[in-house]
Image (tube, rainbow, N blue to C red):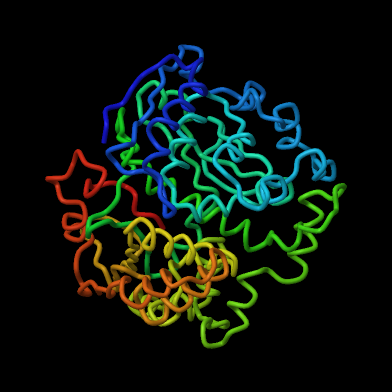
Length: 444
């Protein structure tokens, strides 16, 4: 990878365009971004005024020449019932001829800090071509220091991008809030009545991925795969509940909220058929109730309190979801499957899932059930293939991936301590690397 370059932030947009023309066009392929030899990482100088969090009121369109720059903020911030119509701000799938490009996407971006737009554009350039098609249901994108997790707001067609997945330098990092919100989760008031905890982690070449959140400087490789995973998950949700067929009709005065409400009350494109196929989905799982206790503070029944971590893991093993969180809502099952499968298909990144004994997680905790390469199980792979085919289309390449390239699942020996697993997964020798460095990126 070529060395980073630094230029004043006020020239960031123009500079980004020049670098993309010189560094990327010759190296891009139909399957994704340019080669490492052609890739130049931009780290613009951040003026002192932008080395701190800034409110949405101070945000502005990233591209000053965007045809939508005068309406982006108002449409993003519109009150319920006052959303912008497609005439005012069409979805990317409506205005791009059905094939959004990176310039099309960047015309919809609002940023609180200029460097966030530069980095977002760089990351998009490295993403596979299929990822750009997922932006069709998006009308506006906000990247701001007040955000603490990424999400898609369907009633405005708004994608929110957490800048935690973007920063590389110390000056960029100071723009973030100290709140590392996760967007939901249990307060543990009922979770402690259960006999297990769960963790999942992304892995590459057998070692865990680490965002290096505590570092003061990061490399592009520290953020790319995590950005990709988040983007796939958020846009799979958008695609599923906001299909192209629902807005291609000539309805200029309709809004994203109108179309979304129509769709969600009928059938989603992927989740409904996935759940209507009894060969793919177990509907009445024991874990549907367990997750209400684990994540939503619903009181546990005596039967749920009696379930061991091993029993929970064995049920999970046979039902083909990506993680325990996938049981909380049907659509979360879909977007987790999509994100997991795309990460392995396009990034060579696999998913590990653990169920640990007890209510405390430390190095001495024991693993009752653990699996590496969750996608490759015979229950999970067909479900993931079903989802991918409906979101990015059937292809010989996709068939080949699932038939010969997903590898095999590897089960972790029950009784293995969590500490020894982490030492293998995040070896101390890799402490300064994004891959293999022991971290807190073991999500639950």
